[in-house]
Length: 351
Ligand code: PBG
Ligand code: ZN
Image (tube, rainbow, N blue to C red; front, side, top):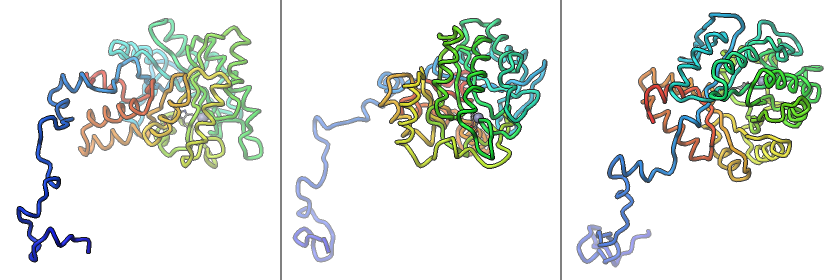
């Protein structure tokens, strides 16, 4: 019994004598009142520690070959696969809303074992880059995802030898894909394959072709995540056998993420990315604390689809959930937010 009998009557009821002066907090002049700063919208806005601005958003797009094509993606309401001509129109509307950064993924006409459709200057992504740059020039920041998984018939992010993804054999192909996108006019190439040494391989290849001003945004800490499920439907890039755990990171690790990030910066990454975002806010924070380069995070397809599905079912308020998620990414330390929600946020004037 921890009861202090001196302070209680036999029937355990408190009376005035039981209350010594320290046991009750009586509001005194000068009491700390944090609520004072929450009294009105302008006051809360004035003291807000974290902000969102349209320039932070990067909108991903899925590009298909041909013309006049536009297909809904069932798992990702509001996101489509479209040909370059339609993409230009979509991006034009987004630019008016303030979305000035896009990230392009391609679905090639044909796949093969080595994914060399990824190096085709007439492939969907280089064609889209040329069209976007012709239409919008320097007003639009164009990033291109660099990875082979949408281009290989087995769906892995690299060349497969004896059932395993061969790191070093994959590097020249990634460098070739980055060069094709850069030559088409991409501002940023974003390797998402998780092969070791790929940032250096891209940097050397780009510099050797006079493309030294092309930025590398590396998916430095990219986890083997179930949150990529809807994307693999969108990009038709699910592996035909096995999984990606021999090259993407183990979700149990954070020190390993710091090692990956440091290596990518040493190899020449201009921007580093953490992916996914919401289940890895601690990783974003730790990365932010050890690098001086900008940090991006990828609010991935599964994170998007879950919010959309929950909102459609009437379980959550979409606007409030989306902003809360985006502020969490900013609070964790992310500068660039790659998110499928960007257009909705700006269209709805949610900021
Ligand atoms: C390709 C790639 C993937 C994503 C971005 N680049 C899929 C994967 O690694 O399986 C996921 C993006 C998303 O889920 O929104 N390597
Ligand atoms: Zn891949």
